Amino acid sequence: MSSPNGPMVKVPRINVVEHIVLPAEESAVVIVDMQNDFVNPKGKLFVPSAVKTIKPIRGLLERARKHQVMTIFTQDTHYPNDPEFSIWGEHVVKGSWGWQIIDELAPLPGEIVVEKTRYDGFYGTPLDDLLRSNNIRHVVVVGTVANICVLHTIASAALRWYKVYTAMDSISALNDFDYYLALRQIDFLYKGTIVKKAENIVFEGLGIWRRQTR
Ligand code: ZN
Image (cartoon, rainbow, N blue to C red; front, top):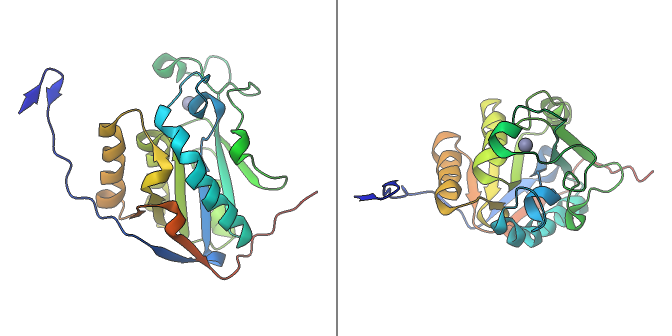
């Protein structure tokens, strides 16, 4: 079958679980690029489906904080003349309103924010060192965009042999193809665990991560 835009494809079976329990002290939550330019309708690269992920991500974040699970925010960060602007146009310029993480998911003082210049949250950042030096083995990755920065960050984590997880209601893409492509790769290629709803990611015990409040 084909459509005017190319072949029609069928999404292969993707394994989804209802519920997972993770040990708080060996787990981290990575919230990818939930910044005004991507998540706010006034943003420069607005992803409409990202809006409905705010609530489940916020719930996950609150439970992670309660269980002292290491929480890391990535912040896509570009400086003037970034070569990526030839693909996407100007976005998340450091210091701009669009660059800021949305208010609903704002990091607390002392929480880790990793500024990244590329799709992959590990590329040129201290992310691997932060996870490794805290003995993290399980990495939950949520945020946007599913097939871009979320997928590249999950891929990069999996290639370093972290166990990776995501939730279907907590990632977003510009269209269904991109969304299911990301899930397919996370499941099939990176052996990640996909949970239907973020609220069913449960942390057991207390993590080692203590937030500094001043
Ligand atoms: Zn970018």
